[in-house]
Image (cartoon, rainbow, N blue to C red; front, top):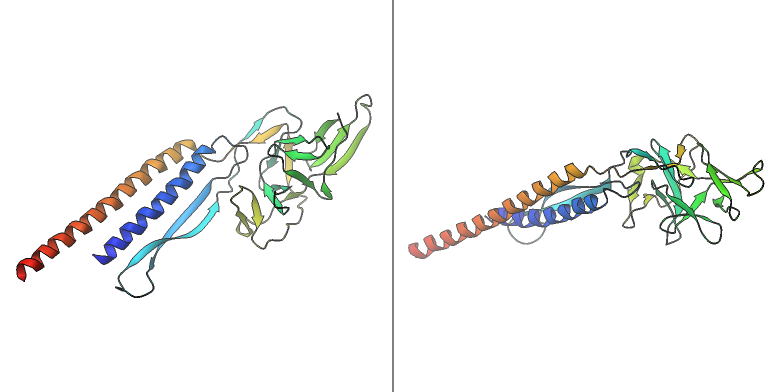
Amino acid sequence: MDRLIYLAMAGAQQLLQQQAVTAHNLANAGTTGYKAETTAFRVAPVVGPGMPTRAYAVDTTTGADLTPGSVQATGRDLDVAIEGPGFFSVEAKDGTEAYTRSGSFDVSPDGELITRTGLTVLGEGGPITVPPDSKIQVGRDGTVSATTPGQSATVNVVGRLKLVNPAAADVQKGPDGLFRLRSGQPADADETVGVTAGALESSNVNAVSAMVDMITLARNFEMQMKMLQSADGNEQRANQLLTVSG
């Protein structure tokens, strides 16, 4: 009975957390380059004084599904999608180098290439600065070229996107939605990573599967509540039997 209570209580708590993760994924089904978060749980014994039969559920791994999403053509010069595995490099708000699959870029008032959320896009030599009012073109290898108005024949290479492709086991997703190496060090540029200009990668969240998961988690939570009620009922009947015996 003691084991049943702890398992049901901890299971219900973790199911609520898993449901929150699934709801977060569903809310980002339309977010460019979003990678679905994943969760996993296991049963662990309770260490300390008390009955040795007590156990509870714990979160063992949290990560992300790095499966590429579908590529949608936009025709916009500053929209870029990665072909296959890989990441764009950006400067996070805390100043560290981080990685994203979202390639919807813009140009800041200072002429720096930035993401739609205002993060600086990093090139292999640092931030990429483009001349004002220039037409930007991004090559398959990540080369950023600018054409100055009135000088259509002159194309200046202003930088090259830092494209990285670390092993999936070496990256982790942070609370800000960006990826970083588990070692805390910046990743090396990978020249084999290619991009497609004028296109964006969609989220890899399957909205239908996420909705089914939400329903399944709600039913599992209800089952944990019934287990708690059953344990409580068993305890009450046991107390009645002991009272009658006394």
